[in-house]
Image (tube, rainbow, N blue to C red; front, side, top):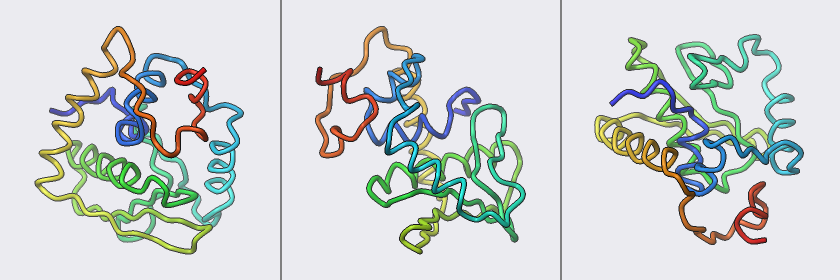
Length: 166
């Protein structure tokens, strides 16, 4: 399955919180003005300024932070708090581009505040898992009601906290 209308952020939210995924996908955006989101934007905007090709939007679905030499795709994050979600977001970018004929991509997640990077690979098993994830995302976002609140340790800092708990 290759879904043009699923964004990288939706794949990320699938791993963070399915209720957040539903809210975001159904045009209930709370990110604007959220302190954590704003910090992330500042980190992204002020890091790696030598790269002229930042924020590469493809098909209104994936927004690659930048691509460096040797086909290295980069995703910039402020912390490793939700690393699994970030890894799958990047795997989705690689999968998406592969389906469009782009081969031999490498990828890494950069954490400029931590001065760390993590390489990300896309395996055949990952591709099969992504197809299941994309199918599940489609079911979630097309549902008439949001999923139940999951109550995770980072809920209090979420932009959607009030929707879930107040």
